[in-house]
Image: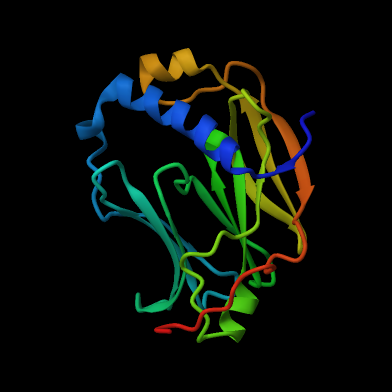
Amino acid sequence: MHSARELTLPGIVGTAAAVLAAVLTAVGCSTFGWTDRVLLRVPSPDSQMVAVCQEVPQFDGPGFVVRLERPDGTVLRRLYEIGDADGCSEIAWAADGQTLAVLTGHVARLRFIDVAWVLDHPTVETAYWSWRQVSLAGEGQFLLGKGLRFTSRMEVELQLCPYSLDAVRRTGMPACNAPSVTRRLSIPQPIVTGHQVRTAGG
């Protein structure tokens, strides 16, 4: 079983760039139809908020915006914006609605958002923060993550399986080449740490 590791910049660039290049080689940019489409809408446990991931068209590939909306679709808070290395495969809420986990499946990377903190600090702009992240793939490994869920307030679970970059080049999509294994991990604490506080509009 692979040990979780805190994400480093070389890990982001190396693994994500290799997978993205393989996908683009296989199917070409036009096949993706990069638009401003909404990819995920996941209601909170009390149905008072919706976590949304939306694709943002960019010249060098889609970016992604993750935000909170009210049930009527109005924006409550922007949580973060990020480039094409970190798409949203799955989003999961903690049962108490205070924490979000976002999975980037093709690199088995998790990002955690302290929703309670964000709502308690409405004037702090978090859109360009680098939230706490954990990568479950070691250097040079290609692991696919799926089935993300919270097992407790501070623990998540997902399925992991290896895949071949050659297969991605052929088909355009990662696919498991061995049985999946279940992995549980504790959420790094604190989630909010070391950020320069910048107020919205400031």
